[in-house]
Image 1 (cartoon, rainbow, N blue to C red):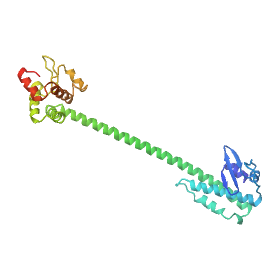
Image 2 (image 1 turned 45 degrees about the horizontal axis):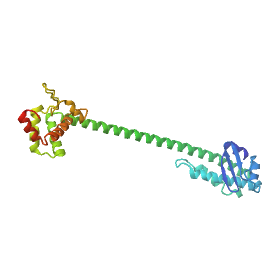
Image 3 (image 1 turned 135 degrees about the vertical axis):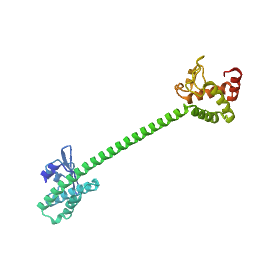
Image 4 (image 1 turned 30 degrees about the vertical axis):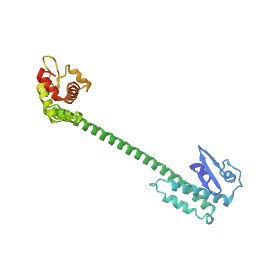
Length: 264
């Protein structure tokens, strides 16, 4: 028994004695059991010997084995260990040698099951970590795809807005939603910017350098809206509507001024 416990380093707890190994040091709480095993005792209680010692060893072994079964990973096979536990159910009917043999077999199987459970726990943890990593990668891929789709949609919307027809549609929507200007005001706006640029966001007046759909002078004024004022009709329209609102109040007033003096 002493050789078995020293070889396996097993924690035995229960009955009248506790046997524990931690950091290579074996201690017991029963002096007689400690003396029988050749290790120091942690407390001074009445000693055990002979049959009582065998039964205490069996009880401690069973208690530890049951704890291992209870705590084992669900995928760990504990059937053999449970059989060994059952074999120690009636220690009174066993001879000393039979009891020692069964205790040793139970200790061996307890350690095997505990190790198998720990190994399975590690595999389960690794599987969970791998699944979490895959989920994170999938989420990142989906987010990247969503960003790419949004960027494509924005690029397509800008491309549509950069056509004369698209620019008119953007201007009509903004004039209505942001300024409350209806169809009559948009007709004036359409006439004004058709005269100024033909709704061409690339338009540049060769005489003075007025730029874009609203013919801002200089064109860099439109940078107050966005840095892409050279290439984005929506940016130019945004600036142009703000300019009309601040300077003339309505597109029709701006159009009347343009008709009178040929600029606005």
